[in-house]
Length: 203
Image (cartoon, rainbow, N blue to C red; front, side, top):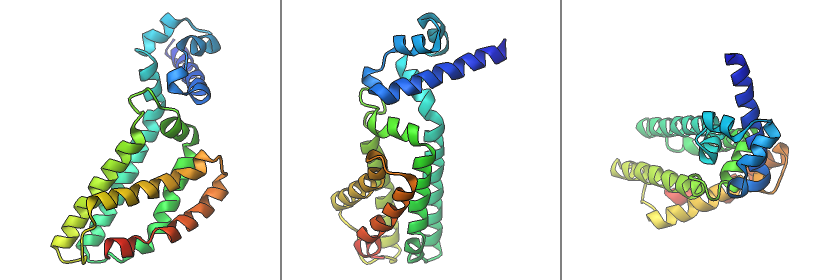
């Protein structure tokens, strides 16, 4: 019975993902999801409280992995700060960007849902919130680096936010434009050339 229930649950999630990808969160229909799965709305509500819960369940594995990658990058950067090796951040910047692009394409459907199909859900402002969080983390990092005398100046936060917005908008452009993974990897080279973070941040 447990195996049967789990199989049905996976079928509901599969149908829901297809529905969200086609119509977006706001226009997605629980009735269509149920019809395509062959279950009643009552059976769906026994497993999920509604559309928001379904959407969140689909995205959760990608969100968790994204958080882990962000935390690891932050730990790596603070380690370089402690070791007084800030210049090495830019030696590894292409590798980090390539890792981010690989993650995006390994989670392609979920990234499309999160970045382009989430309007009307609690994730509707995810892009803006992500950039705000990354800007805050970077600014705190710069403040510490400046206090320790390891950078020559602190970029104004509004200017940092502008640069971070442009940077991450550029990163998701290949996905938004429907480029292949190989095309997206080439875009990483272009993005690195466009954004001279070492000069901008005073490293």
